[in-house]
Structures are given as C-alpha cells and as structure tokens.
Image (cartoon, rainbow, N blue to C red; front, side):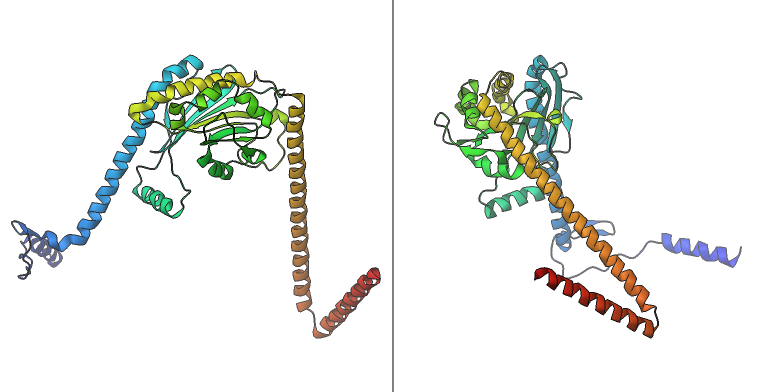
Length: 373
C-alpha cells in the first residue's frame, strides 16, 4: 500500500474519532439542556432569539394580513357576483384576479351603454409590518394623511361622440384635497356645497346646472342614506383622463367614465354594499337620458377648447426650448471641434487665428451697437 493512500486513510480515521467535549464555562448559572455531548445554553443566544422572534412576527403578520385581505375580497365577490351576472354577459372575465396580497380586480363586460366595468380593491398592506408601521407613523406626523381601503367601480360608458362631456364629482369633504392631488380632471371643476346634501358631502362641478340635474334623481336619496355614507368616498363622472394629457385628445378617442369609490366592508358585512352597487347601476343608466341646455353645452365646449389651446401653446413652448437646447449643443460641439483643431496648429498659426477671432468679435459688437442706435 502506497504512502499516499496510508496518509488519506489515517486522515479519515482521525475525522471519525470522537472529539472531546467542548470546554464549559464554569461560571454559567443559567438554564442549559444536555444530550450526550451536546449542550445548549439559551442565555448565550439572546441576540439570535430576538432576530428569530422578529422574523416569526413578520411571517405571522404576513400570513394573518394576507388572509384578512383575501377573505374580505372573496366574501364581497361571492355576495355581488350573482347581481353582476344579471347585468353582464361576461360578469367576471377570468374570475377574481389578485395582484399581490392587497390588490384585487374584476373585469366585466357585455352590457348596454357600458363598454366595461373594472372593479378594483386596493387594500391596506396588512401583510407588511413595515408598511403598517410607516402608515401609523405618517398619520402622527401629517394630520391630514389618511390610509384607507379602497373599493372602486369604474364604468366606461359607450360614446359615439354626440353626447356632451363634462366633469362632475360628489365626495366626502375629507377626500377633496387628496382627489385634487391624484386626479388632473377635477382641476377643471369648482368646489361647492348643496343644501340638500349632508354637511360632510362636497361637490365639484364644471357647470352648476350639472349639479341641479344630478341631484334631481335617485342619487340625492342615496347620498342622504346613512348606510351609504358609511361606505361612500366619492363619485366622479368625467370625460377627461386622470393624468394631464400631453397632447389634445381627439373627440373620437374620448372616454367617459363613472367612478364610484367605497370603503370595502368587512367579510361579515359584505352584503351591506349590495344595495349601493345596485343603485349605482341604475344611476349609470340615467346619465345619457339627461339633457343639458344649449348654453351649458357651449360653455363646456369652450372650456375644452381653451384648455386645448393652452396645451398647444405649452407644446410649442417645450418644442422651441428643446430646439434651442439642441442648437446650443451643436454650437458647443462646433466650438470644441474648432478648439481641438487650433490646438494642433503651430504657434504662428494660432496667433493668426486668435487675431482673426478678435476682429470678428469686435465687428459683431460694433454691429450690435449700430442696431441699438
């Protein structure tokens, strides 16, 4: 047997030989657990125990929060799907869809006067301990900050280009400030109140006549219903995008929307919003049956024309600034190339070039003075 093989064999035997027990700290007086040569002393792993506890707490919050959000949405879906089935030929394309533990959506289509309905749930991040701590802390710092669950029904209406477009909204007054931040289209409106509505409700309208028409129907009864107000956040009717457009939108590409925002009920109270959802479907059916005065329609068209003219001016301004920047970049590149060329000339040629540039600069300055005179 070769010496190399004997060396390897002796190494394996040393590895398999039982090792002596580790040295023990005779000063340790805490709890310890022994099993043969293994000794576990919990007091020596306090930091590791804290880390493990934090991880387990995070995982527990994640599991419980995910379950709470999912159960709330599934209960609502189960309660309202039968009504959706009576309204759409395709009430839930693909069923209830989830985009993470806090975002869910339902897409419905196949209904008269409605191209589609997006039902979206944007819930608090109950599964994320860090987000929850952030929301609580921000609430203490910013008194007007409110972190809420959101259930939004976004109806996209059919549009042949003949129906007048406008922006009108009714909402809880504590929602107004955030809505103005989040949606550009409501900047076209003016804020007001109506005596027929509760004091907590405010109105945003392009034209006052729209408010008069909207509050004549069943919507007024709904807005005075305590059960409705318990869940209500805002209702927006708009023909403009939520984000400021970069170019004027042609009439053929206009989209009209009715957007109802609610606070989603808990899983045990999901049926409480069913009458509200049924009422908003009836309200959507009445929108195209309302008629505005000719003067009101002209004013709405003028508002959009003025905005489009302003938008075109801004586009031209940005275009001009971009062209000027490009021109300056070209001039700078030309100067660098010229300086690089001159640096390669002989000293005599460089002096001639500098004298030529001096005369050119002097002549240009004299020309400007002559024009001023």
